[in-house]
View 1 (cartoon, rainbow, N blue to C red):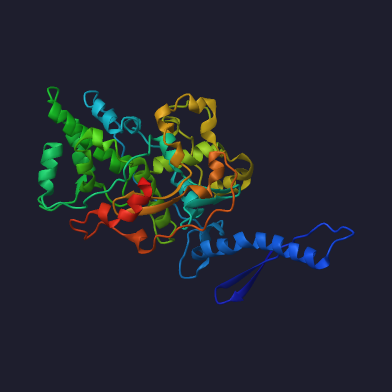
View 2: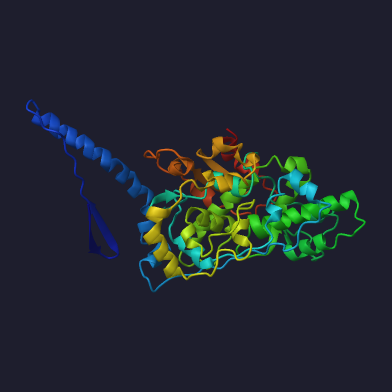
Length: 430
C-alpha cells in the first residue's frame, strides 16, 4: 500500500507499507516466525529500494521529464520529426548491391504514415535509465528482436570509425563518383536532396562502377531518411561512407544495433520537456507499438508484409490519427489486458519473416552496450524478458554510461570512435 504527502518546497514523499505473514502451528517459535516475516518483507523491500534509485532522475526537481505533462489532461506536447523516404523504387540494376550490403529489405520502405501524437505519448512513458517504456502491463522496450524481425539481421561489428576526413571531397569522388559542390572544403555531411539527384540521374547506359556509386548514394539516403534520421538536419554524416566501400564488408556491420542505439538516444533526449523534435527510426518505433498494441490502430485488416513496417506505411495505413489525450486514454484503459508480449509468434507473421532475421536470437535478451560512432546506449534485454517468453525475475540495476552518454561528433577531428569506445566495442563483440 502506498500513501503520499507533500512536504513542501517541491519535495514529495511516498511511504510504502509492506505486509508479510507466516503460518502458525502448535510448536511455532514466536521469535523464529517473526524473523521469517522480516525476511519476507525484506524480499519485497529490495526491489523497491533499487527501483527508487533507478527512478531518481524522474523525480528530481532539477530535471523536468515530459511525463509531468501526462498528469495534466489539458497539457501536452506534440513532437515534430522528419522522415523523407524515397518514394521511387530502387533501380533494379543496383538492387543486387543493396542486397549484398544488407539493405535490400529496408529499401522496400518507400512511404511513411507517422502519427506524432502517438509517438509523443510513448515518449511520456520512456524511462531513460533503463531504456524501457512503463505501461500498465509492465515494462517493455524496442528490443534487438524487434529490429531484427522488423528490419533485418542485427549481428555484426559495431558501426564505428573515423568521424571526419582531411579530404572529404576525395572520399566522395572515390565512392560516389562525384562530390557535392557546396564550396566547403571540409564538409562533414551530404544533403539528402543531393543524394536523391544522384540516384535519379543514373543513365540508362550506366557502367558497373556508376551503379555501385548509385547504390552507395541510395544507402546513405536511407540512413538519414529512414534508419537514423537527424531531428534537425537533412544531411547524412560522411563518416558512414567508408563503411560502404565494399558491399560484402558493409553487411558485416551491425546496422540494426546502430539503429536501436540512435533511437534510444533520441527517446532519451525527447523526454526533456523543452525539446520539440525527435529523430531516430520513427517508422520502427511506430510499427513496434502497433504490433504490440493493435488497438491503437484504426485499421486492423492490413496484410502482413516484409519488412513488417510496410503493414502500416501502405494505404490506408493505421487509419485516422487521434490526439494525445485519446492515445493516453487508450493505453491506460487497454494495455493491461491487450498488450501483446510476443507478437512475432503468430503464424501470419512467421510466414512472411525470413529465417535470416532469426539467426541472431541468442543476443536478443542480453545486457550489452550498442554503438553508433559517438552514440553509445545500454541495451537492457534482461529487463524485458517477458518479450522473449521468459519469466521476469528481479533484474540487476541498470548500467550507466556517465559522460559517454552525451558525446557528439562536433569538434572531434580525426577521432576514431572505435578506439574511443573500445571497451564498449569489446563488450558487444563478446
